[in-house]
Each structure stands twice: as structure tokens, then as C-alpha cells.
Length: 110
Image: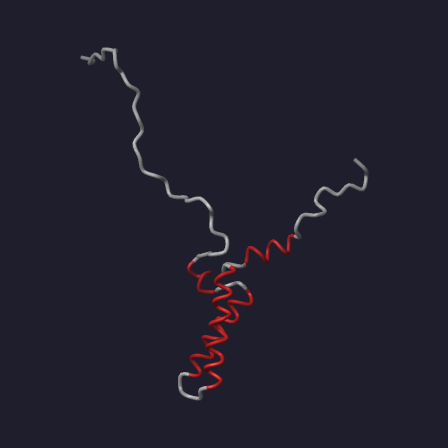
């Protein structure tokens, strides 16, 4: 091993990891949010009625969510669709088998 060996040279930068962990929206949700943002923003700009401001605000929110990968509502609810665990953390309820005492006499203590 040479003196110039860098064991962590191809490891991800800490800042990249921090940015990845701040994201709480999955890639699929980001695509859907971006599409819906485009539809809402187009509808808000093409139609000039009272609902245009609501469409504009909701479209801007979804565009921000799609662009950043971070959802403030998910953060408040402490939800994360990007880093879901593969395994379930719920404990399975079941019974524990007791050893068989076949062929053994069990006497009651007096």
C-alpha cells in the first residue's frame, strides 16, 4: 500500500449526504408533484377567475416540493417517503413453543 492511498477518496461528501437526508419526498412523488404543479400553474395563468390565486399558490407549493424534494407537511408529520425502511419495525405477535415433557413425570410441589 503506497503512502498516497486514500481509503475514503470515493466516499460521498458529507454535504451531499446531508442534502440527501434532508429530502423526504420520493422520486415518484416529485415527478407527480411537478406535473400537477405545471397543470395548476397553467390553469391559473390561463383562467382569470377567483380560483386563480388558489391554483397559483398550490402550483407554486407543488413546484417547490418537486424541485427541492422536501415537503414541509411531511416534516411536520415526521413522514418520509424517500427513505422508507425495507423491513417492518412492527413486532410480530406469536406464541413461544414450550418444550415437550413427554415421558417425564412432573410432580406438583406441596
